[in-house]
Image (cartoon, rainbow, N blue to C red):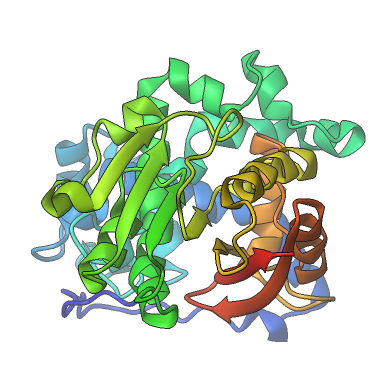
Length: 355
């Protein structure tokens, strides 16, 4: 994860010293895992209320923070005291809370901010389905759809603009670190015309075009998304195209990109999307497919993607995939997986060519 790019205003008071959990008795380790919701929901409260932003200029007492956020002072203090014990904020002997290197990432105005992501993961519409996670494991279907009477999360957000805004902010926070890493690690100088499928407002396309003056692009997404694209500075070097990748994919590209798209969908849906890309490429052996996604680590290796996979299972119906699963999926659609370029975890660039 990219570090904050400015000197943080760190509180000079008492600093937490959480135990090394690996050294605790096994029973204590299990109990900490089982109660992780205590930490995640407390972080959500702090992020939602903007506490870190209120502390940007220095430490403040809970009563001041409660007045600024319209909350109950003692309750807010209890939340802050809890997460300060794991290094998020620090309380001093005067009862004031201040910033720490961890809490800096909850500010909205710093590079690498994760505030919107923390809010998204704690919102009721993403949190509530975990109370019914066993239903998903029994049926294989995301319980989110049943709880909200929608075909999928994207249909829900289309009807709930505030949730869509939270989702968009979270996705930008989670992917922002990797955009410059993508252009640093993959050579787009000979990419010709890039087609970014489901490319959102065009942040990745903009970075590619900025770094490669001879490259052109097509930004493809839903009409409401491309209407607010950020690619205006590139003039006719970028074409905006609206549509659904379940219906069509723009032709004429040399390099097709799918970033953080395929993990939203099951294998059959992904094969359908990739099949359209393959048909758009036609008989051009020099064309390339770039899928920018996580690759789930093998066996018992730790990986953020393994837990993100549970999120996809419960709320979206998508899948995080192993290297073998990616190879199989590429082959189903007529591609060969040539190379995996590691970038900022958990994502990699999976480079495919027409088989």
